Image (cartoon, rainbow, N blue to C red; front, side):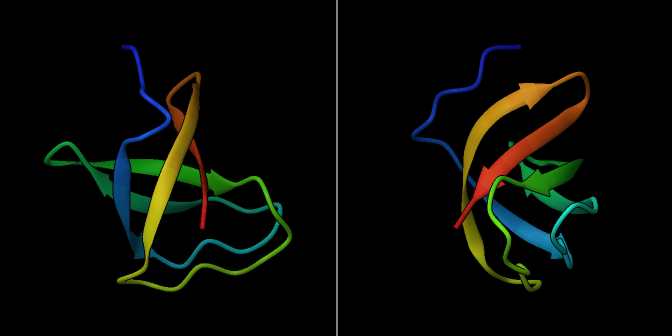
Length: 60
């Protein structure tokens, strides 16, 4: 799957630094990690940076 850096996702499960959470992306739920040392809360809109295996890497 190719991911454009302009695509957005919505945080569904809190994403803490160095831990996975989940996001809703393209009508599916995906495991996700953040590239920055911040906590992302459910409902936040994030930018998809890349795909690593089956985990989306996102940033605020």
